[in-house]
Length: 128
Image (cartoon, rainbow, N blue to C red; front, side, top):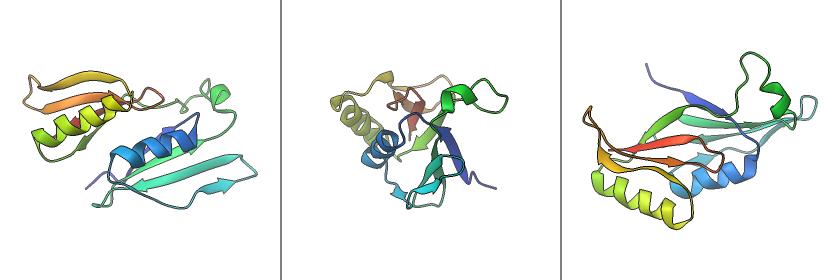
């Protein structure tokens, strides 16, 4: 088994796409748009096949009241391979003005990670 994709409702589809493409080694698909539902999305793929789906509808704020609809998610983790890469990517993200929620460290359960925020406040753990 594997995670096929993680879906994130977003207020600003293009800003979120730009953020994930700038800092993580992802390849985007062509933008999907369903004019009847006013739904747009991108799938951003990692080399190993796992994907992030960024989704948008203009009425997303109202949808948050309905069961099953929530803007964002709690967090997800992206492994970059080494402590040095965790440190350097965290610094690149900081230099671009994004919020660092947790500095690089070894956690109590043995992970080396930092925690950063994407442009809409979703937490991303950057791990070894």
